Image 1 (cartoon, helix red, strand yellow):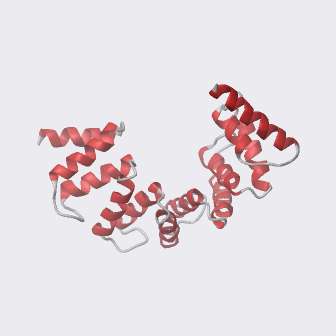
Image 2 (cartoon, one colour; image 1 turned 135 degrees about the vertical axis):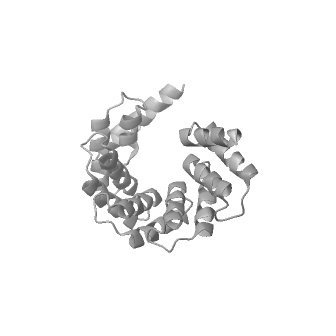
Length: 212
């Protein structure tokens, strides 16, 4: 029955596209193989068509295709351009990617200070990846003054959203007594959560702590 629903969805988006009414829907169907055979090239084509027609989510998805090389050759400069457009329309995921690319100079000149502002904007909208990157920025003093406590706060926010990398970093902070007080029990607890998600580094760290 769900297959029929998928096929119906694809047919609906396809029909809409014939009337030049584009949304991200058709691209998602092709990218994920919903109601049609998976086809990354077609996904990219329809994302771009919708993006050129002003669809914000499609601008973000076009950027993501360029960033990851899905249906098109990887191109950070193009990804950056599309994320900028989508971020201008308040797309939170695009705002995160824009911050991340500025932080590491992907497709643009590195600008850690500006990156932190974009990451903060996405983090405040509860984007777990932005919260994690912001934690790293405060941990290392990249674009901001180094501050273990603020790093810890952002890692915690992302960790509570089940983001494994943040759970691992939060556990590390507890195990070293950085940010908050030294707390091996909490370190073990957060390493365990990340390890349960299959995060290899946390599994290693957990094993190491059990040996102590």
